Length: 210
Image 1 (tube, rainbow, N blue to C red):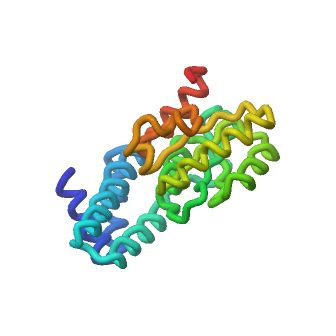
Image 2: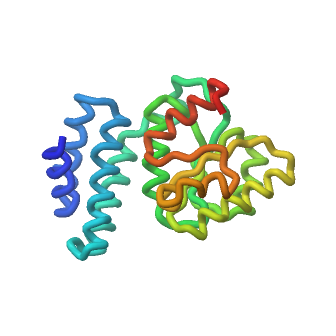
Image 3: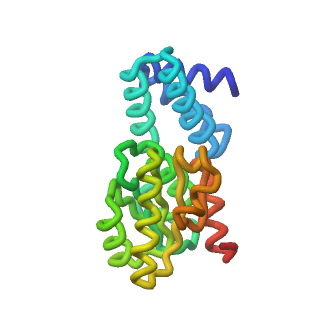
């Protein structure tokens, strides 16, 4: 697996879309789609991001790697309306941030597992609460990259409580991996530390485990 990951990472860094697609699709033939996304795309991007922080890679390499992975994830999504699982009415959104790849990977994992959900894109707290209430959302997944955006979850929770909304909030992103208590402090009902965690979290809500 380490060798495959290295090859995929090198394909991304050299902006070789064809080879990156080949490696990913070959892996999907051997394992589940969710596992392939988690073990190749997520791991490769984390390694490339760490390489940029240490000065090994350029910002343009980080950017293009992310773009290629977004394109690959898009081609892997099941058609709209595809559904195998009975689930609460749910949506996903990037909260007050601009880096959407993490949200896209979670979205693709859930779609690949047979769940339908609305993609709200990027929203601020006020617009998000209005949309949640309008669409009668029962389970809201929120992705953030920066700590200030993580604290916006608390504002969303307070606004929903003021409307007596029973919606459950699931959070994920770097701030919650760094501070394991943060998700509770902002009023979330659950936290995911990896993209694939979303599947088990949604299933736990369906089974009444939360």
